Length: 387
Ligand SMILES: Cc1cc2nc3c(=O)[nH]c(=O)nc-3n(C[C@H](O)[C@H](O)[C@H](O)COP(=O)(O)OP(=O)(O)OC[C@H]3O[C@@H](n4cnc5c(N)ncnc54)[C@H](O)[C@@H]3O)c2cc1C
Image (cartoon, rainbow, N blue to C red; front, side, top):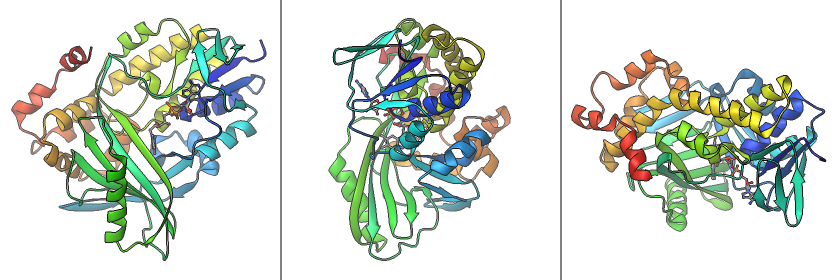
């Protein structure tokens, strides 16, 4: 065998695994295979600094496309600036770091079949003791989802746009197609990403309509300039998840990671922080034991079940948002949430809410009528609907 680990897909999850593995075990020969011709420029992977362990923040900070010391949100009745740092990675930066760390990346390598022992590209079978499948999202009967859909346009403005920090949600825009907000990332004084985002029940995305809406927003803010990049996404928002059943279905074959294995923040659909946690599980195993597909499957299954239990409350919040609240009132839940203490908001995004935090979120003036809240409690019926 010419490699110790073969990773199908050179995206976010596998990129972080490759980085962590080479750091933990520089002797391991790590190969990533991707069908694309090069690193994606269709993504900016962002997260709050507090979503990451300090170690990961140190590792990623030098390769981030941008970092900001603070951020803000804006709602019809409430606006707020928060001192939590924020930052963005892009595909080029991540894949350069992966190569520099000594992993091999093969572009133009569509994986046509994969199992626990090898991935096949064309007529070449690439075998390794550990085979990981990070080829992006795949529907699962054990995960019921709503959708976060967006189209982002990056524009080079003719004069400075004046936005100093990320606008995580500008929900002062008309509410359409569920919860709607604009997300802004000011990469430079004249470069800004404007993303029209909707939390919707359906997974359809009208790219042109949302891109137009982002351009309209830019015009309304007085920004004129050239569109230089576009990104689009339909991200799963977890309403119900049965991790044990998912892993029972994946008891053989390559080990799934990333969105494919349901490793994402249930409310945002973002997966960067979870991908870092998974990369730690892989690297820890490689440090302690022989890294094989089956050893890794068992470690990731345990982690997934722990994570799914930890995230149960976040899925309940989603059910309240999607099932308990009329689409045009969904923003009121977020508006109320953003009045909570900064530490609680940080723990929410990091997936580390305490029991006290959880109580604080659901008590007080109920965000939705109690009768509706009670109907949102059980997860099981949604999984049955989904099966
Ligand atoms: C536009 C966009 C913006 C996002 N922004 C954020 C964000 O800011 N922060 C955040 O945390 N999350 C974000 N997400 C959500 C999520 O984190 C990303 O989708 C993330 O890339 C998922 O990671 P992954 O490794 O599971 O899949 P991907 O990163 O999508 O990687 C999958 C890779 O597999 C390759 N592939 C697929 N099929 C094959 C095949 N047969 N053979 C070989 N290769 C194959 C693909 O080319 C791709 O490179 C965003 C998603 C999108 C779409």
